Length: 394
Image (cartoon, rainbow, N blue to C red; front, side):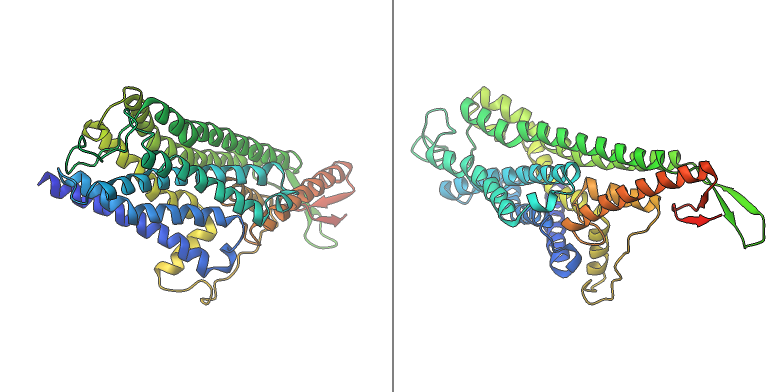
């Protein structure tokens, strides 16, 4: 009964991983608004997690539910190599996404000239090169074992067992390159993104007048309207940004940190068969769960992806369904909404993907300047302003 329940849970996780990442790929293919250079990283992440769900997770479930490995030692080593390669590629792609977002926020006007197609291709090729280098090469050469022989092969290997042997040098190299260093880099880049987003929002509020004076008609006396405090609005925006970043980084840390801690400890102890450690299958599947969460964290938290998901799940193609493009609002509040959306996730805006980010930052700069001018004129009594900073003659 316990194995039946475990099999159902693992099957649901596999279906969620495969279905969610297929949905991401279909959303990008079906919607023109999502076909941009920045989304290459999102699609690469989805393809990596999809391959993990198709080529690795079913065999991991098989090994978990059966006491013996029925597919032979050669396929066992191939399966373990695919497991390490795809998990590594998924983690390094998350790092590439965080670096892409950092460049977009810190250098918005130069972003489109820095992030070029060939550089994106080089970054993706580097991800897969490192992934292969820490998976197929050492496992097929026996560099990960204590005695230097290929695991699961030879007369000394346990029959009908699929073991992932570990030694100290391999574990330290693999964990540093594929988790600990990427984790530090991701935390630093996302904290910088949050800091810049908050600073931009505060500059907008500091340049915005707190009240307006308007004329109902030419001969009527003026009426003064107090505008709702922008500080409250910005506090809500900052809270949303903080929650979003906490979800992105928190899910990554919660899913992978327990595995790599145990992975490092067992490797330093040169454990011959980590799979027999009771905690190992639990932390391994917790790491797998990150591939099921990625479509939600890097897709569903973005407006364009959410709308594409909705149309696809309703069996309506976004390309032909009359999906109306959202025009950017001229208000400061809407600009802050779009700023939070742009800086934290995929980087595409309702206008375009990479170019939209630049246009959005230019728009925010223009709004800062316009609001500051309007505030000076209001103080001098020369003109009145409405909520959006548009001037009206006295």
